Amino acid sequence: MKFGFTTKTILVLLVSLLAGCSQQSSSPTRKPSSVRVHKDSKSALKTSGSNNRSSYQTLSQNKEVNRLMKQCIDSAGGRTSIFVSSLNTNPKISRMINFGSQRAASDIKVFIMADILEMVKSHQLSLSKVIPIHASDVVGGTGVAATKNTSQMTVNQLLELMIKQSDNTATNALIDLAGGLKPINNFIQQKGFRETFLKRKMLDMKALNSGKDNLTSVKDLGTFLTRVYYHQLLGKQFDSKMLVLLTNNVNQGKLPKLVTGANIYNKTGEFPNYGVQNDAAIITKGKRGFIAVVMSENGNQSKQIYAMNVLGKQLAQIFL
Image (cartoon, rainbow, N blue to C red; front, side, top):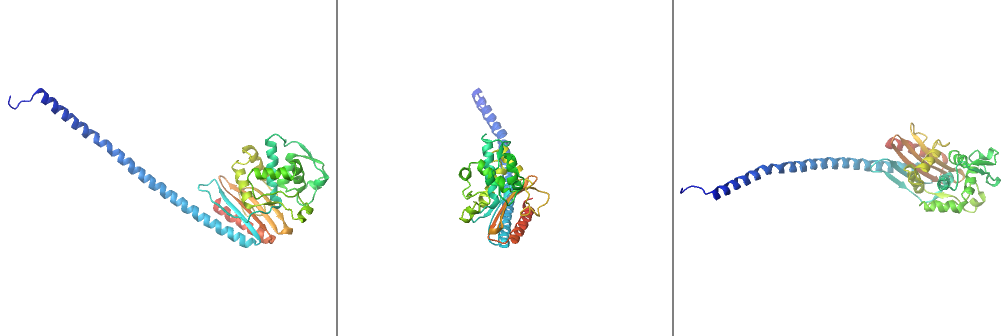
């Protein structure tokens, strides 16, 4: 026929029709892709908004903490340094006004505690080991060991007296046990505490009068407590032991005094003859918490302690 189709022509037409159908049926599959991008964009905007709110809140809290720290310094007078850090927050809030090494008073004892427990961890010591108390180690000041009229105690008993009671005789016995000042200072430096130095035993007035005093800083104390809290100093077993020792400290009259319903882990230091009042504390409630360290020297005791009372309460209102 003049207008007829050959078999070849028919096949070409069929192939063309099938190809067109294939293209039309495949084109709708592109739409979900554009929808997913749209949803991701909304999600990103929401996340960005959330991050902005979190960043704004963190910035606001940092400014408030700065204000409270400066207020505490003005109120305490003397030479006052402060370290503050939030716990279990993201982002972390961490502020510090640090004048470097200051008179440690009894806050030096936390570093001695850590060194002794490092020796227990490495099996050089046992907590149940009985330690003789030499007459030369018996001194007055804080604590009860000097009045117990005992010639020996276990390592664990000495640690509890040193930290909970701030016992000076127990501290001197533990310094002897660790091998003296040099090995403890080596341990302190090895752990990265560059502003902390054990230069004398407790109530060694001869050394003190010659200008030798024990030193630390809010930076080192704050870092120490942070690493202990997160089990990053000696590991979970022995960091937990240190937290237990820091619980129920006999002196909670400084940073924790006006804080209620919280767990307190702290170590104070005081040396009124030199106007020294210190406190280093972990304060938690549930999963929330903060670390605060105040070191104040050359100041008035009542002003220093009151300033710490107020700061502790204000920080609890922010972080707890």
